[in-house]
Amino acid sequence: MMIEARGLVRTFKTKRGPVQAVQGVDLNVADGEIVGFLGPNGAGKTTTMRMLATLIKPTSGSATVAGCDLADDPVGVRRRIGYVPQSGSTLPEAIAGDEVVDHARLYGVSKKQAIADGRRLFDELDLPGLWRRQCKTLSGGQRRRLDIVMGLIHDPKLIFLDEPTTGLDPQARANLWEHIRGLRDRGATIFLTTHYLDEADALCDRILVIDHGRIVASGNPDELKQQVSGDGVRLSLTDASQAPSVTKIVAELDGAVAIETDGDVVAFRIPKGGSVLPGLLRSIDAQGIELNGVEVHRPTLDDVFLTMTGRSLRDEDHAVPDENAKEAAA
Ligand SMILES: Nc1ncnc2c1ncn2[C@@H]1O[C@H](COP(=O)(O)OP(=O)(O)OP(=O)(O)O)[C@@H](O)[C@H]1O
Image 1 (cartoon, rainbow, N blue to C red):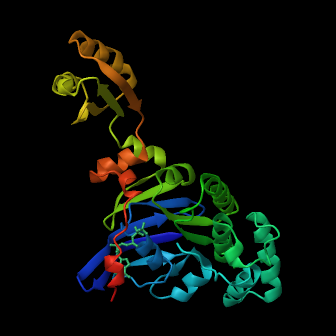
Image 2 (spheres, rainbow, N blue to C red):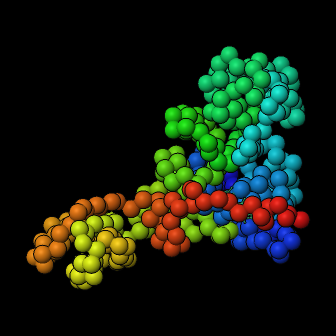
C-alpha cells in the first residue's frame, strides 16, 4: 500500500473559532494507482493532501506514506514523494531550467544528474526548447507542466498533484491527463485533487469523494455510478400547470424515486429509464398532456454526489471559495 491513513483530523484555530477542515479520514492508495480526491471547494482536499505530504501536522490520526510513518519519519516521506501545489512552484523572474536544477539539489541530486533528468523531463512533458526561458513567459499549460517537472525531478514513487488542471484550456487538460497516465504507466502512484467531475471520471482508477471533511463515497467511477439508483428522466411540459398530473402518473411507475417538479419540468430516477418511457409517454398522452421534450441520462458522478450529500457538485464549480477562515488562520 502506498498510502494508508487512519482517522486523520485537522482543526484550524481561527478568530471565529475552530474550523474542522478534515474530520476523520481513512484512506488507502495502492501502488501504481491514480486516485482522485473529488469534492467541492472547502471540502478538505488540500488539507488532507498537505498532511499526507508532511506540510502540516494532523491534529490526530496516523498514516504511512510511501513506506514511512508520517509522524515518526516525515523526512523519509518527503524524500520519497513529489508534491505539486495548486499555485505554481516557480518564481516568475527565474529561468525554468535553473528552477528545476535548484529544486533537485534540495533533494541531494547532483547538478549534472539534475540537468540530464530535467532536460529529459522537459522533452517528455512537451516543453522542448524552453529550458532557458523565464518562467513568466511560459503559457499557463507550460507553467503547469513545469510545476510537474519540479515535482518529478527527484524521481519520486508517489506524486501528489493539487488540482493539476485548474485554469487550463480543454486541450491542455487532455494533454496533461495523458502525461499523468504516462507517469502511472512507468510505475508511479498518483494522488490528485480535483473538483472536475469529468477529470475524475476520465483519469482516475479510483475516486474518493469528500464533503465537509469526510469521505462520503469511494470506488472506481463505474462502481460509484452503480450506487445511484437508476437513470435520470426529465420531462419538460408545454403547460406548467399540468405538472401535478404528470407527477401523479410518474409516482405510479414501479421503482420511480426522487420525483421533483421545477416549473414546467418533472424529473425523477428510475431503473432502465429507456424501457419505461414508451408506456409513460402513452399514459401522459392519454390524459391530453403535451410534452416539450424528454431526456434520459445514465447516472453521472454528479448524481453520485447529489445522492450522497443532497447537493450538486456542479453548482460548486462556480462557487466562490470561502476565504474568510484562511485569512484568519492562527
Ligand atoms: N490555514 C488555514 N486556516 C484556517 N482554515 C483553513 C486553513 N486551511 C484550510 N482551511 C479551511 O479548511 C476547510 C478545508 O479547506 P481545504 O483547502 O482543505 O479545502 P479544499 O477541498 O482543498 O478546497 P479547494 O477546492 O477550494 O481547494 C475550508 O473551510 C478552509 O477554509
